[in-house]
Length: 176
Image 1 (spheres, rainbow, N blue to C red):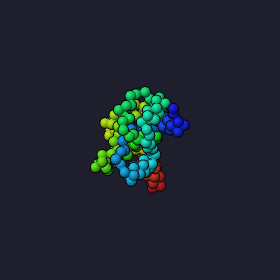
Image 2 (image 1 turned 135 degrees about the horizontal axis):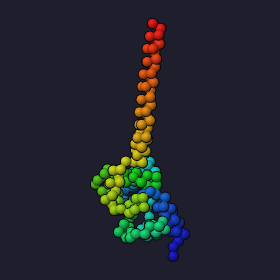
Image 3 (image 1 turned 30 degrees about the vertical axis):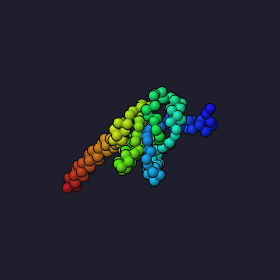
Image 4 (image 1 turned 45 degrees about the vertical axis):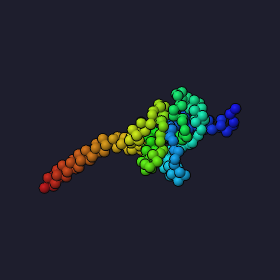
């Protein structure tokens, strides 16, 4: 019989799963407390959340959130859920960078990920990590949108300077 604590935990996990753009299922076993704290700090800076939960609770939470796939392979061994709430790419970058920094233990290991509602294997993590961040994409979009306007303003300004130059020369010719 489920306890109130477990029911509340399933509700909490399901809420995070529904609200996230990406969920990374990772194995952090082998990281010491200092490494976990460093990882959590990096995640906090990017508004990424990590939770460790029992696999049975994760499975129930996935079902409650509306996902229906066989999670037996994904949910073997200890599992930490890493949520990309605002940015689906940021967790992949953090996890891959941290794994690169800790080559000796080769952790955290991403088992799978739910990216924009689709389930992918661990091989997609490096591809997603290579994508530009949300802020970088917005920057490119804004520069792309502002370029034609700034170019038009430059053309108008140079045309106006030419007109002023012609008017000044006409004025000088009239005065002479």
